[in-house]
Length: 234
Image (tube, rainbow, N blue to C red; front, side, top):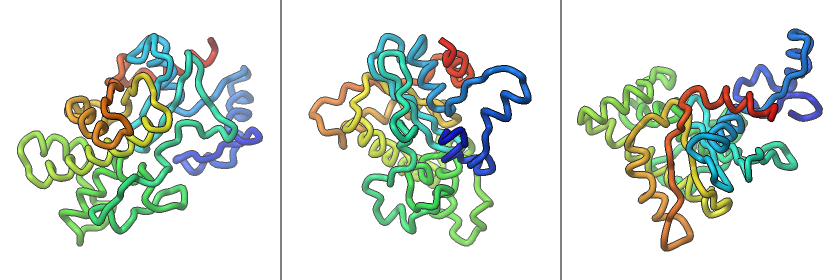
């Protein structure tokens, strides 16, 4: 929120709208708002995969890429209300396989979100395998993951690129924030191989000889964001 108005929403129709005020008028009661990544991180920090950790970085890998930071049980918001928004940093080390830089709804190019969201993964698969196909005609990310599991070499190459990019991007977060635990949420967080392969990939890029940060799935699954919203009243 900025001056009571929504900013930076990937549901761009909400930008500049007084959503909290409108909802309070409709419901006739006080409400509290936070973005989904903050709510997710709070839920997992209180009694989920980050329970008892001092610093929790909660990640959303879904329609977009978001992040939330919880320190000693409190959501870190920041002076600009953008703490944790790693998805709109440039992807570290984007090489030739990431060119041309994809457009992001935020107006920039090559944001982490354009590669690591579900639609970003699907678009990357299309760019590499079906360059003449319309950009909107994607095989979705979950289907690509299933194809890779079944041995499809093109899908496997797409997932390998995805994991490498995710590991590099998370390493940047670790170098800056050094959280006690990273918890992955969103539709792509259900891919088991993320937890098997990401630690080694992150370790190659983190400024430490010994990468110790656990990367965990959420305890509360798809309900974690809603639970975190309830914890805003604590």
